[in-house]
Amino acid sequence: MANTLKMFNSMEIREQVLSNAHSFSDQVSGNQYTLLPNLIGEGGEAQLYEATEILTGRKCVAKIDVSGILGDLTRRKHWEGIVSVLRAHQNYHEHHLLPLLAAGALKAQWSDAFLGERAVEIYPFASSGNFADVKLPYAVLRDDVVPALATAIDTLHGSGFLHRDIKPENLLRFDSCFVLSDFSTAVPIGQENRDVFITATVRRTVGYSAPEVNFQYASRACDYFSLGLTLASLYYGGHPLKEAFKCGGDIAFYRITDSAGFDGLGLTFKADEIPLAWLIEALTRYQAKDRCDVEGVQLWLRNPQTFYVKYILANQH
Ligand SMILES: Nc1ncnc2c1ncn2[C@@H]1O[C@H](COP(=O)(O)OP(=O)(O)OP(=O)(O)O)[C@@H](O)[C@H]1O
Ligand SMILES: [Mg+2]
Image 1: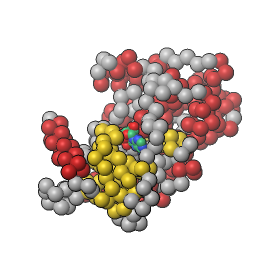
Image 2: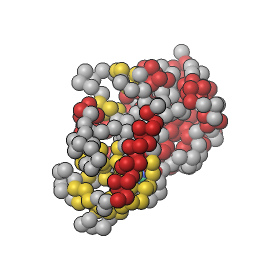
Image 3: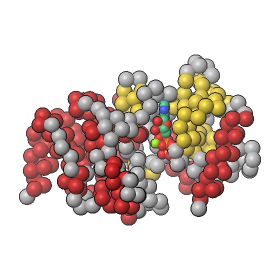
Image 4: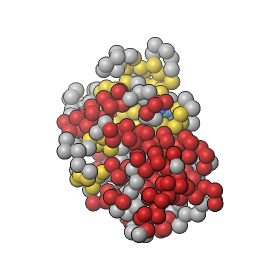
């Protein structure tokens, strides 16, 4: 359906980047970048090109949104919102968000200047790519990844946004720090600041999205559910139920998110690594209200035994 249109648009954009040595200036700092015709990655929503910061020669990536235009005012508002959150949280040692270097619009030549504007974000190049199907040692998960992702999620939530696509593919290592990336699916929590709200679009990554996402619900708890599956995936070196993905989207989605919950994942842990099982179980509860959030994660980091009493034992009664 929309595929043809998307393909067409993506190719137009690629042609644009390939045929013009695009220089791009940040709207706020005025820093200049050159977009190079070297495609680093392409997902459903975006194309990523190599870019160079002109002043320093630093290698960067330019992420161009190919799924929509900034002429769509709701889209523009969401995008400007997340851009300002990222600009305010560039200290990746503290916030563990991939630092945004520049943002603005790429003006297409083929159509009306405003309607044809595409969101462009420039980030520093992270040489170790992403963590899809990567197995990390327990100590690295406990000491680095859990604190980094919990901090990143909590920072976004505290700034009024949900991420909605926490998964190993969106975890990067940059300058010896684990950072969360890919803010394409971020959505404002809304002025009412309610716990749960309805979104216009179902955004889900099979294997990582919470059960309620399928019914258009979005909440902070959805990001914590995805954190649980992300940790399971990083512990195993791949999603524990990836065989189910082969059955196709919906079947796999329900298999992973049915009420069997944590038990349905069939995870096994080494004896001295059991605390990770407790954390994953508390994060991936079927009911959003039963899941642990940043407070729970912090307790787990400080004192896993107390976490066990509060989040596992107490839940069994
Ligand atoms: N700063 C970076 N440095 C190196 N590689 C990157 C960087 N940012 C992204 N990548 C690589 O490109 C891939 C896609 O990037 P990203 O997740 O931002 O977009 P996407 O998944 O295509 O977007 P969407 O979810 O919007 O479709 C990442 O999984 C990662 O491998
Ligand atoms: Mg991604």
